[in-house]
Amino acid sequence: MSYCIRCGRQTENEDCICDGCRARQPAAESAAGVPVRGGVPPAASETLPFSRAAKLGLIFSLVAAGLLIWVVLLFTIGWDAAEVSTGANDDAGGFILFLSVVFVFGIVSFLPMVASCVLAALGVVFSAVAVARRKSFRGWEMAVAGLIISAAVLLLVIFAAAIG
Image (cartoon, rainbow, N blue to C red):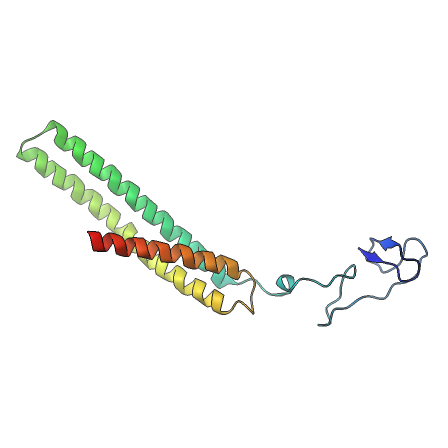
């Protein structure tokens, strides 16, 4: 909304003519030469382009976190299935069945774990690029979130590898 420079009424139209006194209003411009609507300059975040690196960093980190959660659930299901299979059989055949179930679920969960590490590393790279270029692009807050999530995923994987 802007105000008429002659009568002082609020005008909501964008044709720069007052509704009350029909006086033509000068088009306001910001210091950068950008036309101002309603006498209020646009925010800096509206004029900057959106950072694709920030979006990619957040997406990669969220997918990495999802894969890590999936691996944990898959390993838990595999461990429970192995315990159930050996609960009924206490002989050598039950132990072999236990090892085979653990091996199969271990192999199945290995590939998503590696993909989680790679995607978390990509999330760190893209997010770091977006944070470094935060003055030229908007959306760097997403990059900070991507950095935090990716770092958490990588630390969890490193901690799990150190324990195992």
